[in-house]
Length: 443
Image: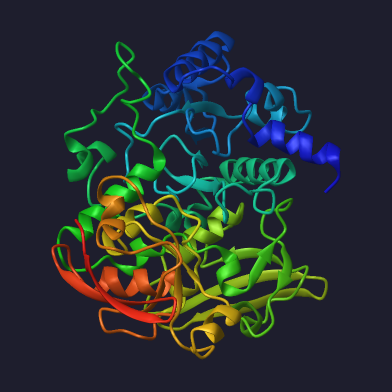
């Protein structure tokens, strides 16, 4: 990617760093509100108004969920969008709403990957979802998942669906989920006493905001406190297409860019250049739409029918997912993984030891050897440090298990087999000694 393209994408999805220098989080939120409401193009944090206007005008709705105070979030930059020769004319055909907090958000309608802080919904005034946009597979790098051309094509796809609605209702009916655990984020037990259903502009507005990732944290906590294990669909949410060996072109809606050899995608018969027209019976407008279908597929496996268009004509295919397929989805980059580490590693970040380190300790390549990359210093995240763990320790046994060869496997085992309040034995190699330490499994 050349330097100019980097600058364009950084301007679109990044933060205007010069404008943020010296600003507090509270000032950032207030400045954003002042600027956006002053421009008058976006309806600001008022979804009922957006739906009412869409009902009156017959336009579809574009809702952008974006977190203002997060410096590393992918963001929608209105100064560029309002001037972009492709995107701006498309936006003019929508009722555009900016939602900067999730307080009071209707979770029966707005279901998305909450580990990202930039999510777009394209909807009908009756609540039908035409599509989603916004994907991330890395904490800070996003250029392989989203682009200006990709967003433009998603917007046009939504406009096309709107033009054919309601005759095409069956193609989008599955894009809305089932009833969630709670109606809105502040009703989760772990958030209930800390937040209200709206922002507090009379006080510290930034602190009154429920961030996207806090919804995912609260959902995991909700299941964890039931002591029945965290379900795989909650632990491994919104699997990225890469987890099944499928790389899509970020400049297109759903066009195959690459297929990983011996992957689920290859076994399904997908080929480079295929345009996915239907995925699970739904019209995909972006990466996020494919993730939605994957997210709704059982951890026990299942078959996802596909209709693709290729140079030789249309082809009917199917993805066959086996039990446990979700576990190949990388969760290490997710913000919500920090909460999981608090629960089951005492705040430690674990990485697989390399072959050289294993050899020095007399361990084989296939033996469990998770190196403590870091250990928390404060509160519940410092539980491992208080228990005696040190950076550089090599974990060779966790609760008697010696086959947990990655941090992800360890987290999966612990959150599905253990419960808060337990003490477990963890064996570590430190230099040439093996030490047994007691680690608390935390609420």
